[in-house]
Image 1: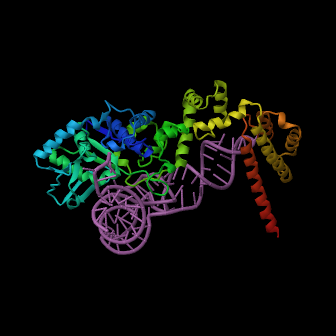
Image 2: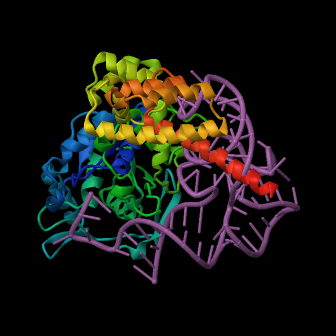
Length: 426
RNA sequence: GGCUCCAUCGUCUAGUGGCCUAGGACUCCAGAUUCUCAAUCUGGCAACACGGGUUCGAUUCCCGUUGGAGCUACCA
């Protein structure tokens, strides 16, 4: 199969969300895996629903992920004359008629069934008697999706149509249109949609956000791609981490799943963590730049923070949570309050730890001694350094609350054991 | 309602009649490691929706039931 051509055909009715973009991804990967071409076609035939700026957002989303399209972007709204010309052909064949200002296509199926070999679903068939004459040119002169996409796909020599599952029941209409023109229909692959945790259509709350939003939140394009592609597609082996390049050679339509996957943010977070570590190891200048762009850290600060915290971070933005560890700011009132709270927690924790003999007495005594001093003049760093060294010893410390949590967890375990044993003795 | 699609651990999935006491990943739990956490490694919990067939043998094939999703617009 040569001369593979596919297209991504969003309608500019808003900013495309991740489910939408996954369709673009699959199209892109399929084209690249077959050495084919990937086109962008804006399906702006519904004048009422057009959102200004949406096209730019679509382009931006694709660009951020590295999904470069071939050739020029095509606008259906600029091809009205072409659709008109094709309407004439149907009129001549008596396959179109005027109805209340709009043109309808006359269903003229000879067989009781119409079907096709779908590349992900296999054979799909519809009884033709459920089909009704449908509108191809609206009364405002613009074509409907059905008409415009069939005409354009043919003229653009699209070989494979990869689109959402919701189109599956309109495909018979499209097939009839191809027949009417005596055109060869392209191959179809209908992709199952991503669902929310409630198994309903993915909502904004559940993760139907744009690529830009995800990147703003600190997700990496690499992680987004990796996550999206594994939602509905699986590789041959057990490998989980894939770069776009690897996917371009690995991808295949046969391994697309028939059922609808559920969006799972925890796994996205995991992918993002994996990619942060991968980039740190392979190209830490790149990571540093990303962190600096996001946080405005100085060179030295960025180096220190990244080095000490890159294993615990899930999103790029998380790095900024650790800046106070190293920045040595003068203490403001808020930080001071935080001090008091944290130090109270630590103080009582230490008391209990010493009772339970979890930590060396010596350590506790030295921390106590420090804590009894007037700590309000200390910098945050000094406090954390002290506690970090005494209890944990790690040079680049933990946030106080983390520390309190650790101690708290250890305590509750110990206490639970103690209670259990006490009860056993009874 | 009609038509269509779909159905393996909580989630993403492998599996195309015997390699399956169903494999991997996320999450969770435990252990190892690290003077803490994280990361890493090891181990653990956890699934073939149900009922009929077909077959020597079904997660895998067929039918039905149930459940979920989509379409049923002068929206895409």
